[in-house]
Length: 328
Image 1 (cartoon, rainbow, N blue to C red):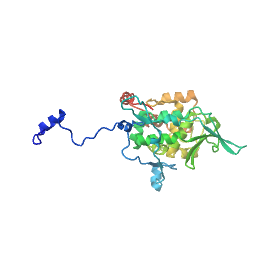
Image 2: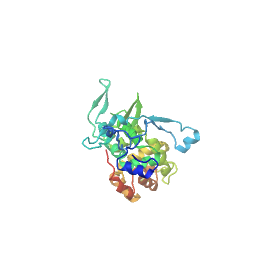
Image 3: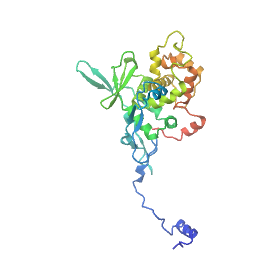
Image 4: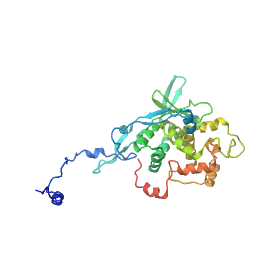
């Protein structure tokens, strides 16, 4: 027996296994089932609460504050537990991750005038994968957590919400490439014919469905500024056209600032972690013949700064860490 008056002796006996440590319990043989990795790799403490974010803000955030309209919010429900899977049951301590791939669907809904109902075809080409690859990237996650204060679990739920949005052929409003709505508890995206298989447009719209657009747009506007306060005010990039006030008003809505930014980034073909300068950006725009309201309105130096800092790029130090993460 150890001498309670001699702490050194007690420690020695415990270390040698002669005295059982107090408050110890037999190890649960199924305890490995509690391991969850981000992307999801961290297990939320306690019950995951719904994330509350701004929704469909009509003006820049500084104007919203002035008019007291920032109370317009929406809750993003916790769904991630429904899609958790074990990565490798052969391992001693198998880990879990969110099975995002199970949510990638090639279903496309199209209204049939003759039968007066919507029909579903498997005619998609996996365009939603671009949205998943962008926002499940570990560096994108790291930047989002830092910039808008969300957790890995929050990001999981936003990705899930974005991926679950139904894809529709047609039904867009006049002059739009695509529209996203929520009806009857379902998120739906309606595409114009030319944009049905466009990854940039689909990423833009799934961002709206995910509801990450407003908080990210608020951060983005800190870099880009007001659409009405740009050097190229009113004129298009080539100087031959005119950008109407309605377009600048539209781009001043935080959700559209970010949605259009993300779509433009996809058109450029930038990967998470990639850096760019104004000269190279202009070259890509010319070579790919990119026509976008976003690049026509905002100043090049501000666009480049945003591309290199907003939720998708990394530093040299980050690049070394990147390979330590496992992408789902």
